[in-house]
Amino acid sequence: MPFSESVKQEIKYKSGFLCAVCEQLGVDVHHIVPEEVDGPNTIENGILLCPTCHDLYDANPKKRKFLRDRRDYWYSICEQRAGSVVDVLQEILTRVAPIPTLLTQLQLLTQSHQELKAVVSALTTASYNQQQNESTSASVVATPPE
Ligand SMILES: [Zn+2]
Image 1 (tube, rainbow, N blue to C red):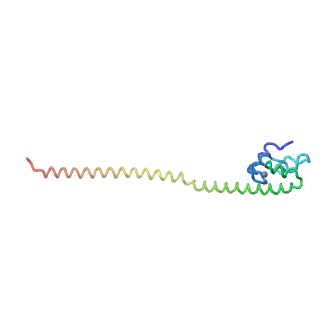
Image 2: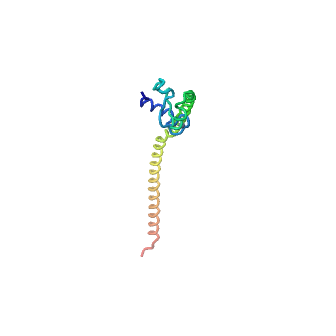
Image 3: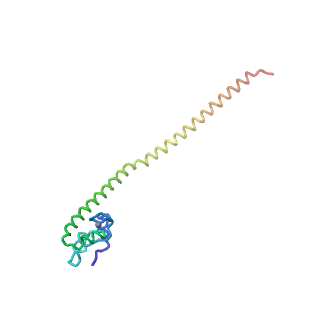
């Protein structure tokens, strides 16, 4: 009986889809202790290997300890990498968390700025009109009657 699909999937994820020995693209999950000698279809007895490493190591009983050690080492590296990815993502989430509040504040500032511009514009127009009226009145007064 071969490995179940869920066991194969778990082993592939743990190995980062790479051969646990040479870190090239892993193709198949293999038994460390072969089925012929009652090797179980468990995650503990599985290893993801590329075809080359499969040919080099899989049939050699003397290499089983090496395969287990190498696999466990490779899993620890994959876990560290996954952990650092999680750390980076958490840092990004922490840094982007204030953005919605900042956007709201920016919208309020923009609104206030537009209101201030409208007030300044109205005051400028009123001041200009007043000056025009004063100069018109002055010129009317200054114009001698005919
Ligand atoms: Zn390999």
